[in-house]
Structures are given as structure tokens and as C-alpha cells.
Length: 340
Image 1 (cartoon, helix red, strand yellow):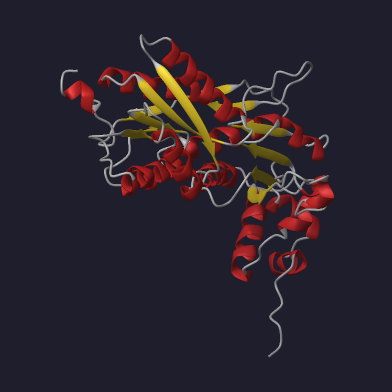
Image 2 (cartoon, rainbow, N blue to C red):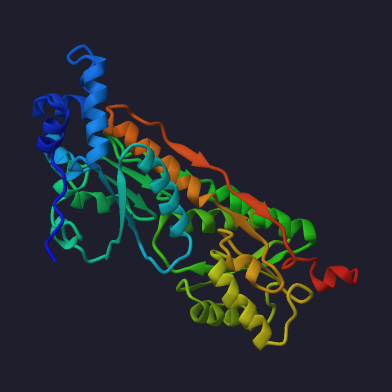
């Protein structure tokens, strides 16, 4: 079966009875003052009749741009990053940009290790939840860091959009303290990222300020099995915590399994909290008390900042607040309900 050829700008020019340069001016939106409105309408009508679509790739090549943004994330398995992409892609599409996603391995040495082979294949980078050093692999490429902490290097720091994770963790601790908890166990993500360091520091400071507050900590990978093991270690102590504060909703699922293995009821015997408020939080039983982070807004705000940067503007740092979502996984400790 013969291939169906696509109409070209030459075909449009012949159909409209004008030159190819006139077609380029009209379809490129640069005809005002150079081509009559009637001629412009004729060109557009001809293009519509023929089903002509401009070769965007060729146009971008002429302009020296790809209109493509790379969203770098640590993993594609975490449900958190899907909404980040959705928000970024929604804003990008309104401005004629596309967004591609890639994980970035810790041992990557340069752009040749990326899916693009060259920093010239992208117009900008959104780097989510990783160290600013990762941007060294794309020298000179405009970039915005998401949920990665403020860039405090001297000179011209990279624009940032972050979550208020410290405030979120303080809200979790305050909620538990208000219920009467004083013995806290932190099931902490063993990940060297700003967001988890900020959560740990905020929790430690808040518990230390409580009269009689005690905090123990164990670390784990962000998966259910590792989190269950860390929670079991905390709960096996001689004077175990009455509340487990988890760095992530998936970690909280592991804490649930640990409680069940020890015959503990959530929340009657043990309160559990998470962080992020992904769909899993309401799939757990009882539903999980957690901090809702606006992941889709993070992607949208980050893409807006990157577009500002590409337009020559300098976007200010943004911090997006989280929201404490109190559900059925938290309650007063059993000792408190007995008046002890």
C-alpha cells in the first residue's frame, strides 16, 4: 500500500495562490502589517482544506530550541511523582512545551548517561527531590529544583519550589502531643535528601520541647518490608513508643504490618502517621493520619518558574504549605485513656 504523503507548505502556497514565504509568515503568526487580512484568511483556509500541519520539529530546529523539558526524579515507583509530572505537563502544554521524565542514577557521570545524550536536547530541567549537584551534568541549562531545599551556594542560586515539610512534621507532632503522646518513634527514610533531613530535625526539636517527650528513631528503605522491620525494632524496646511517626505513607503501611505482627491495634494500642497523603493513605485500614503535600501544584509551580527563567526573568523561591489530614490512625495512648 503506497505511503500517504503529508501536504507541505508548497502545497498550501499553490492552493492559496501565494508564495511559500507568505505561507510561512501567516502560519508563523508574523503576517500582520506584511500580508493583507484577506490573504491571511486565504492561506489559513487552504491549510485547513489540505489538512496541513507545520513540522514543529523543523521549526524548533530553526529557532534553536527543542521546547522539551526534562523532569528528573529519583524513582518512578513512588506514587508521589506522578502528580508532580501531571502539574508540570499541564502548564508546559499551555505554552507549547513537552515534558519527559527520567530517573537519575547516583552513579551517572554526565549528559551522555542521560536518555538524551546531550544537554542540547532539552531546553530546561526540573529536578525533584535530589541534590543540586545533579544539575552539574547539564551545564548552562536553565533549571529549577523541586522539593530539594534552598540552594544556599554563593553566587546565583538555582530557583527552588519546596514544600513546608518542617511545618508539616511539627503539625504531626503537635497533633499527637495534643492526644497525650509523649513517647514517639520515628520510622525514618534512609535517604540522603533535604526533605527527609528537614522532617527529622523538625520532629526532634518539637519532641524535645515537650515535657517528658522522648524520641527514638530507626531507619529504613522506602518500602513496606524494610519499614516493617524498622518499626518492629522500635516497638520491641523495653519502653516502646505509643506513636510511630513515618516519613512516608508507604513506610506507614510497613508500620501497620509491624503492629499487626505484635498483636497491637491501630490506634487503640499504637498511633501511626504518614506523610504525603498519596492514595494509599485512604486504602489503609484504619485510614491514615498524614500530611497532604500538593504534589501537582509543585510540578505546576516549578514549570511556571522554569518558563520565567527561559523568558529571562528570575523567579523567587516558593514554599508550598502542607496540610495535616487527621484520620482514624491516631488516638490518645491507652495509658491516657485509663487516666494514668
